[in-house]
Amino acid sequence: MHKAGAYDVPVPKLPEIARNPLAFIAARWTPNPVTVRRAALAALAMSVVIVITGGAVRLTASGLGCPTWPTCSGDSLLGTREMGIHHAIEISNRMLTYVLCAAVGWAIIAIRAMEPRRTGLYRLAWAQFWVVVGNAVWGGLTVLTKLNPYVVSLHFLLSAALITVAVLTWQRVGEGDASPRPLVGKAVRQLGQVMGAATVVLIVVGTLVTGAGPHPGDSSAAHKVQRIHVDWRTIAQLHADFAWVVVGLSVALWFVLRAVDAPAGPQRRSTELFLVLMGQGVIGYVQYFTHLPAALVDLHMFGACLVWIATLRVLLSFRERPSAEPGRVPAAASAEGVGVREAGVRDAAGGAGRQPVDAARVPLADQGGDPLSVRR
Image (cartoon, rainbow, N blue to C red; front, side, top):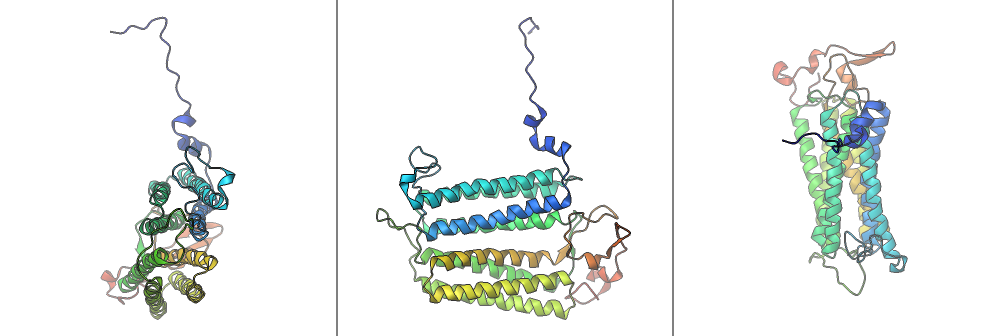
């Protein structure tokens, strides 16, 4: 048995900030709801920015500006100025990944420090971080495979996954933690789901247009970048066909929401989606008939991000999540608060209180109402 001796020295205890920095911050700082929502929005904005700059890397033929990964060249992490403009563009995009990590990290810290603590939202914020890490590793794989078009396509789809998680986080910040409550009927939700699925197919086919198009990502004579062996115009036509399918579904949804007198939130979101689709369609046709100029292609990628965000917002507007605590309204809810009016939330004498739910909000199964809407 070991006996304490004169030479025994107690192991120093790590400071609290080193053991659990997030808990340390949360114990000393409680952000206001606006700060948390802005942090989540910043993470979403950076998720879109990284797509635009990644597109610029390919469209300027800078995809192999750093020929290796995780270093840039040999043992050098950043490379040298002598490597030229393509290197500068590629390394700048790599450095922006750290800015994206900082934005996501800020969202994680702000959400962890919220009162009361929201475990589900906190996990969703961390999911953003891990998607960023996974996509960064996949981005390295695009370099190691010398810009294989299928690997590049999946790189963009992982960026779309990041945007999805970021939108969900931003939305959930302004909601409560109760179970979702539908604002529209089952048939309307199913129509929205079909439109969402069609939008996913539209985005996937769009990545194939990129893989077959005239912008391989590297123009050096030392290496010929592999392309998808199909006429890009054929794939572009298929992409346009799916675009019209999505537009048609969005118009149908717009009319149905008004026909069933849906809440203002879903109607407004469907209008926004239609306008974004129209703008994206104009850009798409102009770039096609002008033979895919780099600037318009990158703008079209930005438009694809907006289309997906607008689609997600439509789907999320079909339900509300009030606070699980009776009488408490989520403090971070935005001014437009999807479903707030319909839930009977009012602000009187400076205090928010939840009024009894109207009978029209009782589930359809209990009232035998209109299968398209939960409202009368």
